[in-house]
Amino acid sequence: MTNRRHFGNVRKLPSGRYQASYWQGGERHLADTTFSTKADAQACLSTMETDILRGGWINPKSSRVTLDALAIEWLTVNPQKRSSTFARDNSILRVHVLPTLGKRPLATVTRRDIQSLVDKWASVNAPSTVSRQYATLRAMFSYAEDTERLVRNPCRRIRLPRSRLVERPVLKSQELEFLAEVLGPDQAIFMWMGAILGLRWAEVAGLTVNRLNLLEGKVTVDRQMTRSGQLDVPKSTAGVRTFACPKWLIEEMAQHLAWRGLSAKDGDQLVFVSPDGGPLVYSNWRRRIWQPSCESAKLAGLRFHDLRSLAATALIAVGTDVKTAQTRLGHSSSRMTLDIYARVTMKADRDAADKVGDFLRPSRTRRARA
Image 1 (spheres, rainbow, N blue to C red):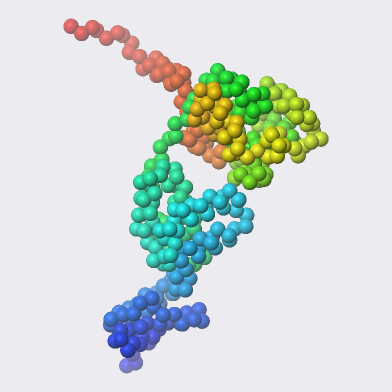
Image 2: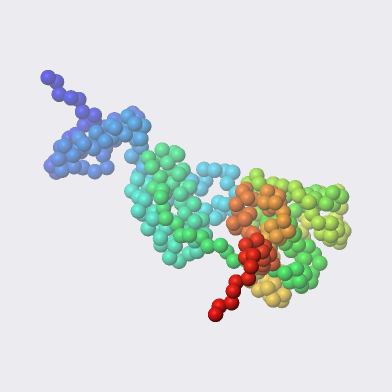
């Protein structure tokens, strides 16, 4: 009887331990460790053989790549990545991930390591921040899995802190009007674009003359201003939209364009610019214009993005169907419109209470207690 041919080779080292090796992909590979017995070395080779037959084998050289090296590759592999996204992901990895895991080979990072890191973040950061950092980490490991550096992504079944609904102010029309007076005519229009149309700051800052249809009273959003002062496409297809604008706001926009000396022939000109005529820079605009005006209007702490939440709440409050509200706001789903932005107004809450009370009201008055 002939002995069964074993996959790979086992040899005894001068130290008395056993080394396992095998050929795959035209290369000779050594097991990551040596073994105290020949049987243990052969068991390792059997595992490797099974992985190869099942298509789950990963080249050990690939899995030895450190997270530092993988991060550089992942950040630069997609030339279409937006500059703002690149800067955000790079900052997250450099500050929150690589100091802890950067020197570790991919194959040594476990689910427990990921959970420990997430728990550390959760102890000092808001749930939304933790979720954003984890999304970046998971995306990088998914890339490692897709490029066959890992058999299985360690970012699985990770417990994330629960996000709480961000409390955003529900402003009254009088408060908005006062803020508009403080801002002045031209900056007030910028504010109304956020409060009435629900535009993001970058969408307002990126508006050009040819995106305003003053005759039909419509606004088209298909670009936005990046932090570097460049026009770029929205992050999602849902962000590209054309929708109606109130007549009074269209008239205000027409006056603004006339004041700036702009007409239809200036189609590519930005509607809103900085004092030197260049693109608006968010940090400068926020520090020099928005914050001082909000403080003067006794609305300190109000963020421009809060106006977008106000617009969503107003759309729901006046009876706009969710699909229309979703489209106007440029959301990818109606759930985002309702769960994240729309807030219940006090009047809507009172109306709901009265209607339910009338519907379930008892038919007769309860007897007074003896």
